[in-house]
Image (cartoon, rainbow, N blue to C red; front, side, top):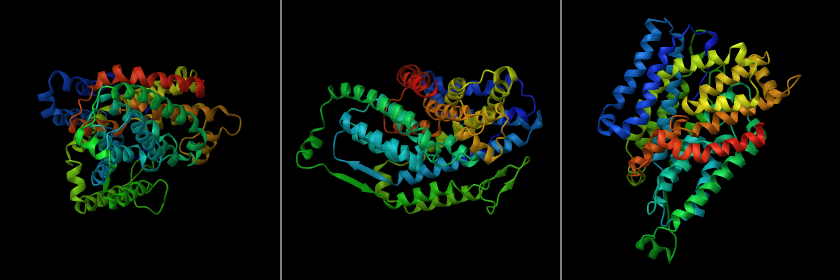
Length: 458
């Protein structure tokens, strides 16, 4: 998912406060619909999400007469949807199964492995590759907390070490943050986050272990040997093509064709065409054994595509109003690394974390009179060169907050909702929106985020 976001409040027309209502309504329905009116929500969520998105879009086009932001948002949404769909199809053709019952230690090993490979194939790629095997290994005692911690670790925290790991960091790389800056400066918070969450998970999973009896057929077969089955190896190559195509950004390579927009924005289409072509080839030549073993359907990805259409477009005024507030002189004067960490992080939990990162990177640079559009000045900002060494800590705060807080809700990061949908399709009774927050992310994730703030940011 590639975004070319600038500080929205600087160029956009005034946005009335009431325009945030469709976004609030959509989030409220996502939170309450599956609980209070599940049948209605299941049948109507596509129409509701698309309808609210189109309502906000129409207001921008016909009342505010703003075409630039809607077109740019559409381009961002298309990149997001195509990348997620391509990865979903590629991962769906990879079937991994082991004839074993997962122990707490095995589960921690899977989560740790996912956190590592997330930095090579992205949190989305790692999530889609491992979530089905993770569920199958635990099908004798699968519980919602196991999927929630999978979201915490593999779908979010794991991708903190490279720009390939999570969309916000990839935006920073495209803007001029050196590729290995994240590994150099975010390794300590990555270790703290992954280790702390794995430890909490191990304790919870050990308690779960005491209450189950392994399946007799698996237990009997395990006495002889543990069997491991893997098919769909060619899809690993397809995954490589899809991830490699994310670098085909016209903002980085002048030779790439693009669609020009007002303000010098270059909208990519080559990258998306490559990913779509690979996805089609992937599905056409996928192993039927792998697809059947994964019970592959398009339902989970369609749910994400429709819901995020509404989220992207209803989110436009929310992003603009938050950027307008953050750019006010009174607010800017109070911007410390701690404020950047908590504010950028909190917004990343309820808004998509990639544009949130972009807005706060722009805001942070503006505070020090640096130009977000200059790759040289972004580089200087990343390393705290010159008279402003504090900028290094500011960028660390924005980066850590945007990535880690993305796990606070289902909508903070693209893979979250995807994992939830796949788990529900497999029969896991996942917690609704608010229950996810109040029973899991606030109880287990928030203390880890506070610990990182104390040890790294403060």
